[in-house]
Every structure is written in C-alpha cells, then in structure tokens.
Image (cartoon, rainbow, N blue to C red; front, side, top):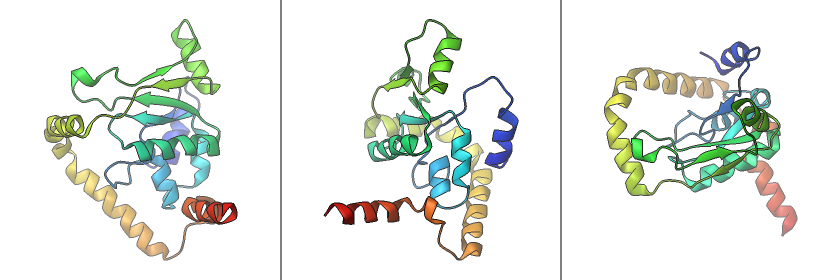
Length: 180
C-alpha cells in the first residue's frame, strides 16, 4: 500500500502516527525519510505524521542522529523503540513524557513534548536479534524483493535528480561551504 494511502486511512483515526526507523536499515528503502531523499515519496508526506522514531535499537547511531535532524526540519514529535525481536531487548529504549495516563502520553507526543531514553544495541546483540528473526524475515523475502525492485525501476525511469527540497546532502554541502 502506498504511504499516502496509509496516511489517508489514519487521518481520521484517534492515533499517533510515527515513522519507525525513518532512515531505513541495512541500505534498504524501508524508511520514510530515506524514501523522501530518494524521491520515492514527496516530503509533504512526512508533515502528515506526528513523530519520527529518533532512537531505534537496531539502527546505527548515525542514522538515528539523521532522524533527529529530520524531526526539526518537519516539525515532528519524537518516539523511540528497541526494535526488539527477543524478549530481553524490550524496554531498553522508551518514549517518555510528563503525563499520568495513556491519553496524556499520546497527546504529549503530538504536541512535541516527549523524549526518548536509551541507546542502540551492540553489534553482538544486533547479530543475535537478526539470527533470531531470520526465519520470520525469510517468509517475507519475495514481497520485500518485489518492493525493492519496483522502487529501483521507478528511480531508473525518472532519470533526473531529486527536487531541491529533497536533496539534503547538497544543502549540507552548501552549509559547510558557508561556514569555512
């Protein structure tokens, strides 16, 4: 289902919409921000969300920092998650807010008054988690491969550079040139 259709379905629901691991993982196109940067999804879609996951246990520190930078660009709230597939991982990264009930907690995320506590997993833990979830992942390999192929074909057909608003690296290079 295209991202825009999913967001359309969620628009009238009483829920918080947060993009999990927005920078993708392992070079995949499975994160909202990485797809925006590759021009698969317009950047306006990010502004329809309430939050980005800014600390994901299974993602690299660099990608989590980039997710934090994206939050300020889109004016979103923050969430965090362990990306846990093994029971002992659960709760190592948590979203926090000053609230006494679930509704208050969710409202704080929407109002950009939440925080995240935790840190990324070690390489050893990521490897163990990957092995534990490998059988489950293998069941979905054909559909994941199809989506990757579809996105690659779309990108090849475009034969053009992404619009300036999505060209984050060019913006960073220009900012660095101005500083030095």
